[in-house]
Structures are given as C-alpha cells and as structure tokens.
Amino acid sequence: MSRFTISNFNLKTLTDNSYKAIDEGAYDSEEYGFRGHDSISIKKAILSCPHAPLIIEIKFSSPSRGRIINSTEVNVIELASFIVESGASGLSVLTQPHLFNGSINYLATIRQTVNVPLLMKDITVSEIQIDAAKRIGADCVLLIKTIFDQDLAEGSIEKFAEYAYKKGLQVILEVHSEREFEEVLKFKQQQTNLIGINNRDLNNLMTDIYTTQRLLKKHDKGKNIIISESGISQPKEIQSLKKSGADAFLIGTSIMESHDIVSKVRELYLSL
Image 1: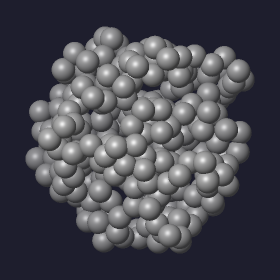
Image 2: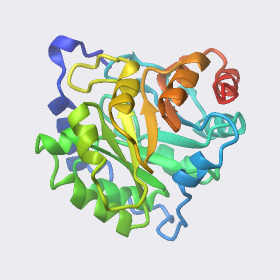
Image 3: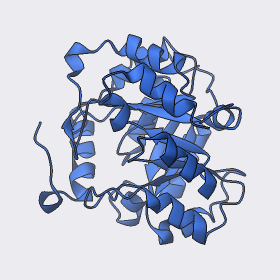
Image 4: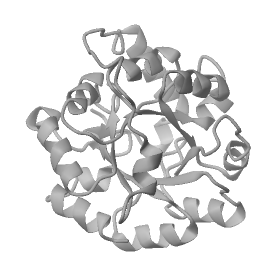
C-alpha cells in the first residue's frame, strides 16, 4: 500500500474510499449473528477504569504510516485478548478496507472473544455502515464532524447519530477544530456525549498532541466524556492530557508498532 503525503492527500480521499467499499459490498455480509447483542457501554468502561482508560486500536495500515503490521501474520483473536488482558477498557477495530486494510470480519471475530466495548472505526458516510456495525457486534461507531460539515456523507451528523442511538449503539463525535468542538458541545441528543478530539488533522495528516489541550483550555467540556485521539505514545502524554481534562485515550499506531504490545499497553494503562 502506498503512503500518502501532505501534498497528495485530502479528506475526500478517505470518503471516496468509503463509498468505493460500500459499492464493493464490504459491509453487506449477513452471516453474523449479533443483531441481538446487548451493547456494552463504552461510557461506563471509561468512567469505571481504575487507571488510564485506554481504547486500543487494532489497525494494520494507515494513510500516514502505510503498512504497520502484515495482517496475514497476525492472529486477531490472540492480539485482541492480549490487549484486553493488559488493561484496555475498549478496542477500536478498523473496518475500512481501503487505506487501512481493515474488515468487518476482524471486528466480528474479536466480538466472539472479548467482553469489552468495541468501536467500529471507519470513515462513516452511509447508514449502511451503521447497519453493519450492529450486525457484527459493535457497541459504538465514529462520526467525524468535518465529513458532515463538508457534505461528504449521505445526511447530517445529527441524523446519523440518532440512527445509531436507535439501534442501541453509542457514538463518538469526532472533532479537530475549535469551531467543531464548540458546535458538538451544543449537541443535546444525549445527556452525556462521547467527544473524540483528534490530534491529527485529517486534511493534511499532521499530528499535534496539544490540540486536545488547547480545545479543553478554551471550552468547558461540561458532562461530556472527552477521548483524546492520535499521537499518544508515552505515559507523560497521558498524564498531561488527563490534567487538561481528557477522560480517555484512543491509541493505535504506537501500540501496533511496539515490539512488545502487551508491555506497552500495560505501561500506558498504569500511567494514571
């Protein structure tokens, strides 16, 4: 898989690949028996965690890093189990086949093995993907605000969130800018929203871990649960983000690239 650079990447690249995956039937399988799955609350998992609430991301490739791990050499069941046993409060599983080398099969397989909340991590542009999330046993979906603000999805973020809630799924509303954060703080669909602050700008793939701190310094998060996403690799970063008001931490690349994933998860988990 080729690695994108700032000069040849933009947000539409991500959404175009989602529509391509939908057209190819990547989310159409009916073979999974999880429609009756009782969703596991990611909110409760975060709030009840005695140490650092980590949502560890199982990802094999990304636009910014290219291939991270050869998926054919990984037993996803063992990987997920080891990560959970090391302290993860939840797992984020990439299901986007293009650019991320993900699959709904990975999440459905992991669902049979672990009893923690599972986030279906995808570039969500259609309710078809939310339907798939329910079928494969996900507990939560991601909605990226800038995608909806740029009219790159098949409806509004409010409509998609409501559709997910009606299916019993929780929703992480992802923001990057101050304007996006201000607008999401006004959402009243849930008493407590899950808000992901992405330290990576999806328009150019640049990462600035202080994005979370800047937004929380300027705005009162209220009762919302804040998840800091991207660029986190050290205990001191988790400690600093926690002091700024972050409640949980979504970490992918630094874990997947570690030579000892179990030890790395444990180190970050015990940082608080």
